[in-house]
Length: 148
Image 1: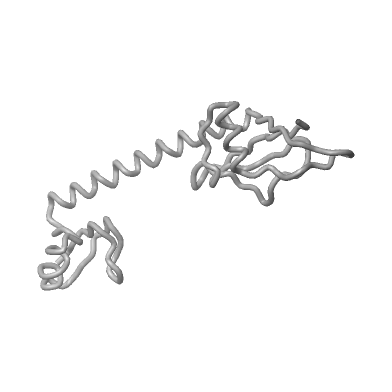
Image 2: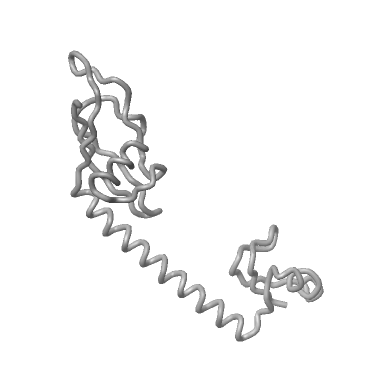
């Protein structure tokens, strides 16, 4: 019997997959526990429509991320940092502070976990940081650190 899985089942398959199982296994375990549905014409059509809808939504999110990346690459955030003699700075700037400044200055909601910093910024000047907006889209943004 063929079954469409409605949840991930260990050693059998992932949600949305069409798998072939023993009739008794399907009738006594998978269908009663709502882990899957019988693969009849209606359920197969529903699965096909659901997958098409998911692909459409994923494509829209990718396009939105690409547009937002274009906006981010043109913008610059100015962050003030205390410094002493000879341009030595006190402390550092982390991804949390960059996300807060982006919200304050540009009104962009950027998750601090998506900002990629190899190490915190510890010097004055302009720095280029990367922001992961999507699996396939990474934007570069300028952060200008000034004395303040």
